[in-house]
Length: 438
Ligand SMILES: Cc1cc2nc3c(=O)[nH]c(=O)nc-3n(C[C@H](O)[C@H](O)[C@H](O)COP(=O)(O)OP(=O)(O)OC[C@H]3O[C@@H](n4cnc5c(N)ncnc54)[C@H](O)[C@@H]3O)c2cc1C
Image 1: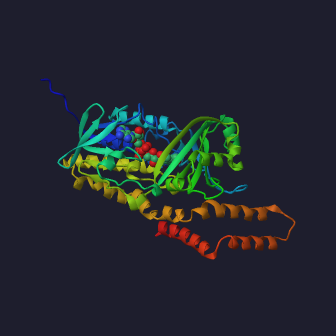
Image 2: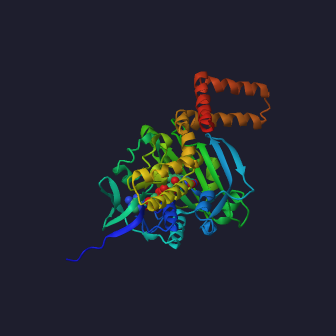
Image 3: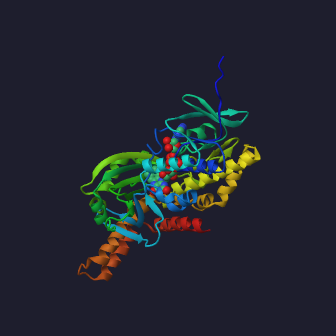
């Protein structure tokens, strides 16, 4: 009888997003035989984000070739706006220094990353869904795809936010809706010259802008969420992320909320004349440090979104993905040298994460989302409205005495909100800040 050849690698990486490709590159660069498996027909085919990649992490991974990435625009202008019905109060920041992030299409960027990985000797298997992990004597020893079993000394789970493989292995618990954000996004076509005009970007340059919006989603019972807008060469993305529990509780449909945001006068002005090219949706897990999964077990490591590595306050995800992937790649190499793929050896990954910004940031931000979530109505409704009322007086030249107007404003500030509620807001914001700094 003909014997079937057993496919065996030093490492298998499941998922060709930024975290998976980064682990594959580092392991292969160090001499490991690595198979990178992706369920889509090409990397990035179904991946979505806001989005801009952070260049610092990319430079660490690919110091010589990062500049050849398919960047759309370098994000040099950022703004954060508080939206009420008829007002927008905006803080903006512009950098005249080296860009720190760049907008990319995931379909192009992830594919480019995979090409870089192939140059480093990584074997790439697209259109291959990993259905389950193979375990023997308490060790993960390979993966089962729809067609075959493939074996490896170590498997890196880089399968993104809903890592079913990590859940099935018992590395993580079921997510709770309170920790989940559902994001919806439209990609809209707009001529390059109009983008440059509307966002005040240098003509024919690669300058880009990113905007964030707080408020403007719903008049009553606003859900906890944030809107975003990014510029690309000749498209813009407009989207939002909303807490899943709030969506269920208030019965909102995320696309209705996105319509509300798009209709806000300060947002619609950017979209005028644009044409919808694509609508996409994705989950973000914000359980953070308090709900980290087990980061390794015998023969397995978990990286990027699969491990819950995101900092939603700063829209950081791809940098966490790339750096955690790199640390996992280094861990694979150490395990190969030690010829030991047990949890004990692989747990150096956790030490590396602890020494990096990843677990340091997740730890210091561990209460921020809970603190802000507890004050949803203040953040999403009350303060955006009050900020608008304040600047209406400040800029309005109403020909009424300012003293009276400001006194009226202060009176309304506290008559519509008890002192107790006000102190709760202050306490929540201060606790968030102190948590980050301590
Ligand atoms: C709306 C939104 C906006 C965001 N904006 C930003 C931003 O502006 N900047 C930023 O840095 N981050 C942003 N993020 C976060 C960022 O996108 C993620 O943190 C990052 O993509 C995580 O990379 P990853 O490789 O871990 O996972 P992913 O990019 O999700 O990749 C996982 C890969 O695994 C594959 N896969 C899954 N299961 C299997 C399987 N069983 N077999 C084979 N393949 C499988 C998937 O097809 C996918 O290619 C945003 C996220 C969202 C949702």
